[in-house]
Image (cartoon, rainbow, N blue to C red; front, side, top):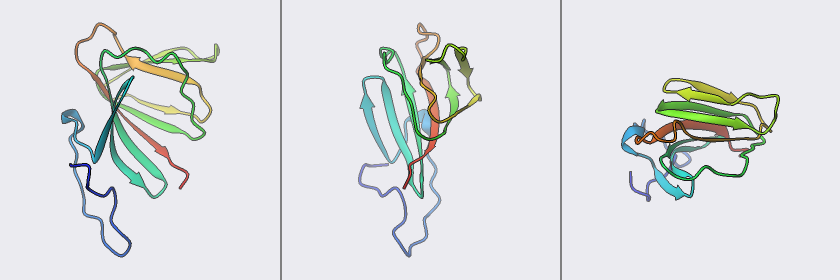
Length: 130
């Protein structure tokens, strides 16, 4: 998909079904960050769906926290979650695992094991408040 394509149909138009291969990096748009590459698959109607590819980037030293629930689905590789709260144990997710991350849960996630050569890819779906 090129960056000029709309994420949704315009008012009065029916949206056509779309297929993306996240293992090949397909998305409506992508952006690189210091902690991975993010591909937007859908963003409208109050929800956003993205894929994230984490390779050998540094581990983000800051905690992630959202005001809304996040749904995380690991597609390839391993993803380690650390939680700021000492009451929550760190978790390692593998392909096919789903994490339901409650709102206001401070965490960070990174490719696991760190020595793995293949990037970890996961999907994240969350409300956008629109």
